[in-house]
Image (cartoon, rainbow, N blue to C red; front, side, top):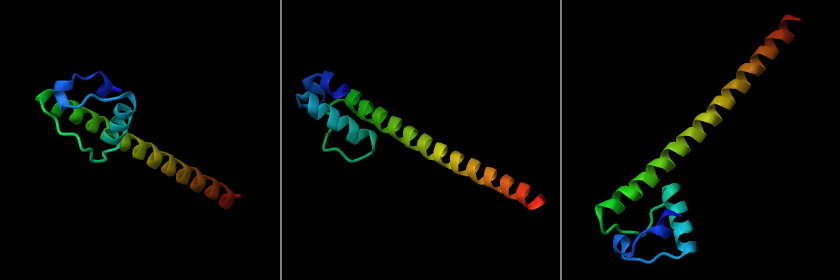
Length: 85
């Protein structure tokens, strides 16, 4: 969405709503976009979207790992209870 509200001078492109959504998603999931920033503001804008994507992906991986380890621990405890029975 942020690309839609940018001035023409930043990327030398006037983004449509659809283009802005596509470029935001591509930047967020770290797919190389064909955008070349014309100003330092745009360089930091793209960098911030990329960093937000990295943090989100790492958080998702951490949640998945945490859930997997919790399930393994629970399964081991159940196994020990059955074994002790």
